[in-house]
Amino acid sequence: MAEYFDGWFRPTQVKPLPAVASKRTLTAAICNALIDRYTRSELMSVLPEELRLEWRRDGAQPGQAETKRDLVTGYIEDWSVAQLASLAQRLSTYGDIYKLNQEQLASLVAAYEQGEGVQGRTKNLIFASTGSKPDLVLRDAVSNDIEIVANGDTCLIYDQPLPDGGLKFSDLVAWWAAHQSCPPDLDDPGIARHLYQRLAASLASPPEILLLRTYYARFKDNPNVIALVPQVYLHYDPLDQRTRRASVNGAPLARQRMDFLMLFSDRKRVVIEVDGKQHYAAGESASPRLYSEMVAEDRRLKLAGYQVFRFGGYELGQPCAEAMLNEFFDEIHSRMS
Image 1 (cartoon, rainbow, N blue to C red):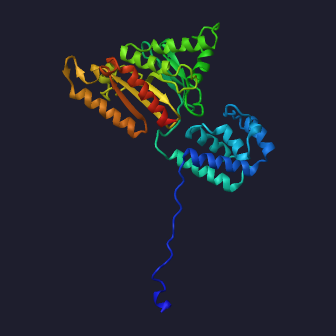
Image 2 (image 1 turned 135 degrees about the vertical axis):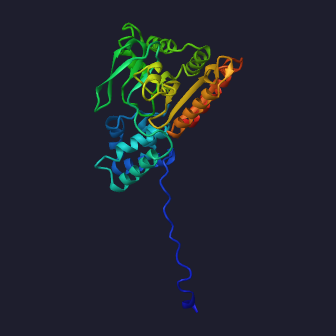
Image 3 (image 1 turned 120 degrees about the vertical axis):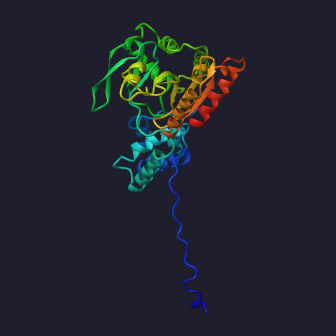
């Protein structure tokens, strides 16, 4: 009788679940790779000296960690997914990490790279424009290095590699300290204030100024907050709009600049737009054309992986605007970090 049922019920082949890059999976994989390879005494020097990690646990020292896993976790326990993925990428290239751990790290990095967000690397951030469009040339077309040959005093260019964990205000302050426009006799708080004033100078509308001021007032005691960067070039067209309309191509590029940009990582980019009447009306009359151009560009940005958020100028003119913005900024950091 048993032979009668042979072949009816075949064992189910269960496919392994795809790797998911989360704080939990990345932390576990990093810990496993390190504690399998190094002794505790080796980790005491490898973590701060070779990997250049900083101890993150207040009120305790590395030597007080109970286990090797606890020791490693003390260096990375408050890291974002982007920071963990970057460290996993580094460890996956180490020749002395066991092959099994290397494969696990590489699969998690691949899962992170294939997730939602913007594809490609941040190379040049052109921002805080205060006047005429800068005239740019490619100094090295192979490396995509740019150089301003005219109107260089009207904008800023951050051309450093994007740090792990995104572009923080402290990164911009350190860069500004070496910038030719920064007075040499300022202390660190003075440099930060001078940079903020330069960023604010690129804004003309009261709603945009309110948004910038509210953000940095909210996080004034945290220099490592992600920078809110104003007036960032998204597209760059060397021709002005009148010349472009008269050219063969006809139409100028839509939305050449973003009102604000936040870089939580290369992949996680947040665009904030402040809409005045000129975004949806011509004079006093509603303009379906302007509105259509605006939402079409939003679709393009979102499909490219950007997060896009809009505020109305009228909304930011209300008495409760600052409280509303503070709540919004807290939610953005909670979601993106």
